[in-house]
Amino acid sequence: MTLTPFRTRTGRGTGTRPRTGTRRALLCAALLAVTFQTTATAPVSADESGDRGGNGGRDCVRTENPRDDRARQVLAITRKAKKDLRLKSVQLRVTVDGREVVTDALGESMTNVPARPDMHFRAGSVAFAHIATALLQLVEERKVRLDDTVERWLPDLPKADKITLRMLATNTTGLHDYVTDPAFLAELEAHPFRAWTPTELVGYPLRHSFWYEPGTNWSYSHANYVLLIAALEKITGVRIDEFMKERITGPLGMRDTRNNFTPEIPRPALHAFTSDRGLYEESTFWNPSWTTAPGAVITTHICDLARSAEAIGSGELLSPRSYRTLLDPGTVGLGGATAKCPATICLKQTEAKHFGFGVIVINGWLLQNPSFSGYAAIQAYLPSERLAIAVSATKTATTPEGNMAEVVAERIAAALAPGTPLAIG
Image 1 (cartoon, rainbow, N blue to C red):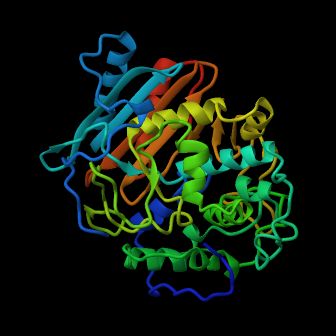
Image 2: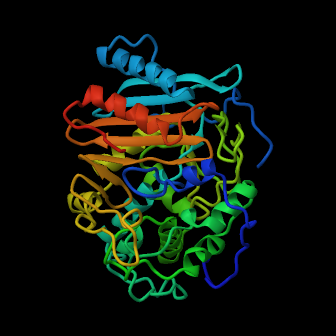
């Protein structure tokens, strides 16, 4: 994959403004109070079984006759949340110290097709946590330094001699986010099956001046990870999907988490539906190439998502020093409005709520929370309790806007760790 030349022109939008539903769904690219955005071939039947495994080599199946008080409590909370939020499906897995508390799936994938825990869904920004962890591994091996500037790998990127690997991974470059660009939104709404290239995506931010000088503030931009992936491929000489398999998903036994170069979802697939374009429609096979660079557009199932939460959240693949960087790579204290950057973009990064190294840190919880094209999920880990919560959710026509998997996870966290709220909103 190459991102040069950056000056390649991209197609402009249709000239119409996106509907409110689409705008709200896609403008959720900022930290903390909103969701990070990250989304055909012939449809597959949701009740067809494909490769199973994940979960350390075991099948991802629902807990039979849960007798543990915590398991029953979690299931009761989830059933009520599904009803309250009018969700089509909810998949969940909760572990403590790596041991299963409960795994289940409620509702339907499609009409009269029950949801199952082993159904695959799009995991979006979960890939960012994996990529950032792999970068920290390269730093441990002294193959790169976080404060290396990127001009040797991305020579055509403006300010490449000032932008570092750390800035790309922590969203401190000052680049605009293409997901909030009205021209991009209009094109995405009009053509949800379009295949996007990295050069086209990064072209939108490069039409604008930087929000601030690199490293001096904080603002979320998907372009940062598109660029970081390009740099990592040049650094390692390995395609990013193979690099992630070698460094993250392989060592963790996440056999059902994989990149997809097409909109296909491995069987069995959890189907998604959305009202983003003003009508309730199936969105399962909308092209997710816009979410990040090729090779990092991943699908997973709920057991692998819980495994990811445990490993990333505990620093299992990192040294203690790198884990400290994961928790705070220098973002705490950054953020805040300037003459050029409004407070809605340059969000204040505090000890309680900040973007870490590829993860969001909220009251000690480490999480990622993808939400796009009808899919919503969250992986969350609380190190003090060794508690992992993984939730995936899909929508009905009357589901409230926003990432409802977060809401389910927040309710579960309130019951299992009442002294440490998972307060995302």
